[in-house]
Length: 310
Length: 287
Image (cartoon, rainbow over the protein chains, first blue to last red):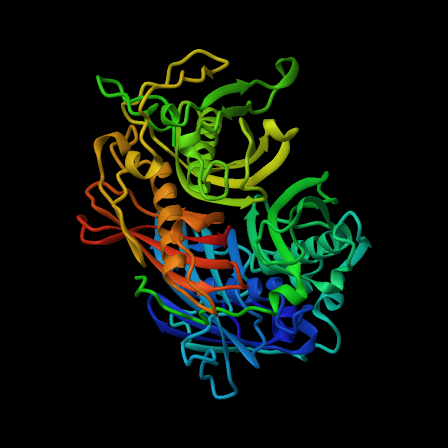
């Protein structure tokens, strides 16, 4: 199932696999299965994969809200509060504001079981895995690169499926760690990872930034990237990454305990450069990570709701 | 957000920056070249502005980032001007010595928006990095605003004044504890458009998140007090103007590793049909 021909056959979104469901004019959910190929050091779906999930559900909701106009992701934030171990993760998206030039959506990510029921915390309360926001820039006039016209009645449910993954998503996408110590990771651009306007999909850019930050923070803390978990992503999309390879330029900001996790943590700024487009700066990502043992020690008020927030 | 003042007797542009004694200066392109000016600012970090982390509290830091980033971005779109739509900050230190120096640059200027990157260093700690931020501003018609000022723009640091109220008093934040915190929308908290200044929203989110995290006790031992909590990494989306008040921050504690709590903060203008005006998240640390 596609929207206006997107995603096409043989696309990474199909191979990861997403099920989407529109709940109302302003709310939708998307789910994906947590397989070893999308996981990080904590055994849960990595932040970049969850960023892709929320980008998918936000995009689905946005298409319905904005049609006949189209949109591009302007910024994305995602903060993990506990491992997204699934077995399925669900992003619950809701429209926050629809303006003339921008649209803001928030999404709560929860672990769900095989029946689609939320996996609650030990206290029986909701236990979200992550919280996310997305800002989309409104593109008037629709998607001029679409291969098919947008159907008048978009289906309420969609299954985006393909052949599945047979190795880690990072490898499947073609990401190469050129230098872990400096957080230099490169990504060739090809249709397999395009978004609906033929540039690198926003979740892939977030994942690239996450991989770069993980490697750099691992090296800076005397560990390895395999023992670090990036928990926070603040992504600003400046221009589209079209030509590639997209190359990361990473600056470690701190390695210490400002995150209060009682263990090794740190933050980094990752700039994503389109090396095929005169080294144009396409994306800036602020990332925070911590040692896996600190993150999986997550205790606390699993899902404690102090007040109805909306 | 800071910027030129609306023509007329009211000048709301300096309320926030004067309170924090923010100095600002424009850095034109080198050798008169093309491109956008960069912008810098300096915050002395007076004692009454220090929070539980020992340095400038993060809500106050965001207020000043908003001021510097707003001026920077506004200059890049003249004769139009800007309004803040989002602030994202990663905090690397809370125990500032001060003064803090902000440096901002335009990352992207589009037809409808400007994205700025801002870094903060602690001059009292050998220019050690304190925070990195990305801010987005929407471009708008300035209406009757007076946009004439000397270039390069320079706003000197205001001198210290006696009997300056602490942040919660200055920002008219009502005492309390728990999931909901209220702010009274006083006139000095309004920006040149007459709406609640973005910096006020940031300070409210900081205070509210710390109170909510403190109230959500967990694990063995006594719950921490709000003054033992400090806001750190913050995301704020400015969705709609807050004009009426009172302004209410409603928090939901989402959890996190021990000592590090993520709090979702939804800010409503109670007097304007309770509409949602800002939405964000604050990482609260036990210090």
